[in-house]
Amino acid sequence: MGRLVVVSNRVALPGETRAGGLAVALQAALEDRARQRHGGLWFGWSGRIDPQRSGKLHQANADGITYATIDLSRRDHADYYNGFANRSLWPLLHFRMDLVDYSRETWAAYRRVNALFADKLAPMLHDDDLVWVHDYHLIPLAALLRERGVRARIGFFLHVPMPSSDLLAALPQHGRLFEGLSAYDLVGFQTERDLERFQDYVRLWGRGRVVAPGVLETAGGRRLRAGAFPISIDTAQIERQAAEATDKASVRRLRESLSGRELAIGVDRLDYSKGLPERFRAFERFLQRHPAQRGKLTFLQIAPVSRGEVAEYRALRQELEQLAGHVNGGHAEPDWTPMRYVNRNFAHPTLTGFYRMARIGLVTPLRDGMNLVAKEYVASQDPEDPGVLVLSTFAGAARELDAGALLVNPYDLDGVADAIAAAMRMRAPERRRRWNAMMDVLRARDIHAWRRDYLAALATAQSP
Image (tube, rainbow, N blue to C red):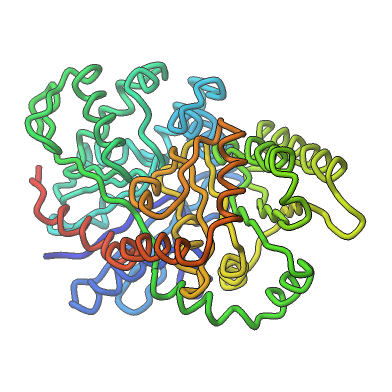
């Protein structure tokens, strides 16, 4: 067995803070392979913008792992990343065809940058490598590597949802794009439902066939494997982190500011897929439908700004600011502000401390591949006095946490409002029972089990 080669849009370089569980898991996988003296390589965009041209290569080595990154030109970054990846593919893959902004220029840039990745990466690869490509930015990469003579096993993991075949087919050039997935040996999805949708697309639009569950054959006769590998969190680490965060100054200040009231918390990147306007309206509906609860619960929504240069995201931020002002203007008391809306990042240990003190975790996306905030909220709870997770049925995490979460339809404002009220009334024995059911899943299927399961399946997949 050769090296593990991880390919992602961004690379977590040595010495950088790795806030996300994915970066930690990928780093652990590379370190495991390095300890076995096989070595590893992590390849992707450097995060740097070169005013002139794309492709300048940087390399660094640490603990048996090579980190190779390339710069992108301002135009390529605008058209590949902000353009096709995030204004065409992102809304499409989150079922928002109404927000898809397609142009032939950004599609060409997406292909061009993927070809640049292939040009720089192919000479570094060996036939016995395991290559693991991540997410929608790099769908065509395997086909482009194959064209350059790469014979290694190549796997792909989609971190976002897979929509229905008819939605995929509405994208111009959908055939050329998704046909590229057939060059991978293993394609991984978050849920069985995502896998089913992909199989439907192969059968209905790709003129291929499903040979067996998880085994597909393209119209050209090539076979590949596909499977569901639900991503997770470092459960044990978050349990420890949340317990230790209790005495952090920022956590103490938040607790004191509540004046004995309960806390509901939402933590989401500012994105239209997260259902934040619907959540704000549902919280107001809770205040209207359950007047006996007025003054007993404060809702804190943390929503760091992302892609602030994109018009849809600027409009969303303005809408949320207006909604928060409307809710507080209509329901606040001199000693109580029902909603706190914050557009800034917090250190991850601080967030787990906030989760631990929150009686309710509100995770109500309109569509999400998995949603690790839901899992982190659960893992952060005090086992003796856990909170209640209110979770959208359209989050991938709902498939695993259905035994303990209060599942809601985020479009049903009354239903979400009533779930918040039910969480407020829920007694400790039922909260502990629900929490234990979810923790059994999170302890058995943590982030390390996810990457081991995926890499084991890739290692045994049919090579080209």
